[in-house]
Image 1 (cartoon, rainbow, N blue to C red):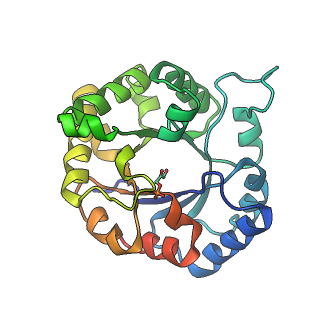
Image 2 (tube, rainbow, N blue to C red):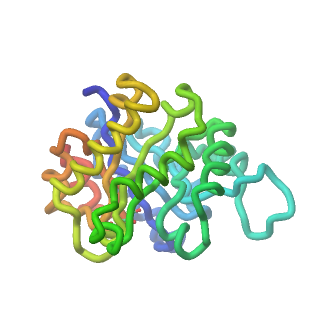
Length: 251
Ligand code: 13P
């Protein structure tokens, strides 16, 4: 399979400016281009400077953690897609469960944000994933399918081919409890089958589907060796250079 393998870091609301630059410098110095991508999802204030630090590293790309659905205007405290684009951001994380939970972002709003990111020429990393009660009820595959259908399935095939999907079961985020490789594979395979049904095998096979939720150096290899797991979206372990480099080298 020739789809992109990706280790994406989501720093969330961590690292002040100096700490973020030190982390970036350590990642640049400690990683080599293996043909796989490393993506750094930094806070907004870091983006421009981190972009400069990674500009000679072909394998490291820049991501924002959110953006506003409207193009500009009176939205105090928000950030627009053209602002992100103007400092060299290539990817935008959308629909993280923390944005859904704490900022009330639902599937319809996320569909708007996906459109805005694509129209701005950037690439969405679209997050999906179920909470524990849904998994315990056994309806996790249907739940995730609904998230994808309602936020992404209005896209043309051409636009859809720019999407990276991140499956992040909420019960595994920041908890130290990782989905087992078999649980991740089950969901990723189901997602790919859904994509094949909607967009055909070629696009489904080319779509990178990342797993997120307590990915660490100790479990990354087992997760990434699953046939439908194309990498990880990493929170806590992306804040430690040695750990994140080890995860990047786990394909
Ligand atoms: P942790 O790796 O800290 O569990 O966070 C996962 C995550 O939410 C990445 O977006």
